[in-house]
Length: 68
Figure (cartoon, one colour):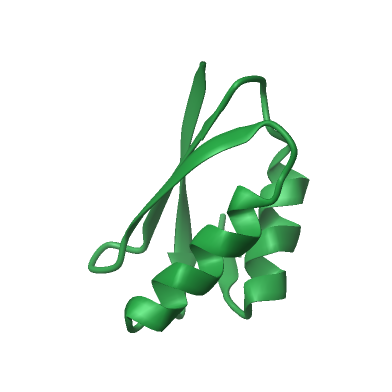
């Protein structure tokens, strides 16, 4: 199992959390997504390493920005 936490900006409500969770959850290998709205932390659990570019693309697709 791999776990990595990312910072996402622009999320303000439960709908934001759902959008990010849904998009990131579609990445091949991802087995779980936990979003902390207050801090903007998105923790991704996967059965193999996930490419950061794929996470960035999924967050962008949801309408938010991955913070470097």
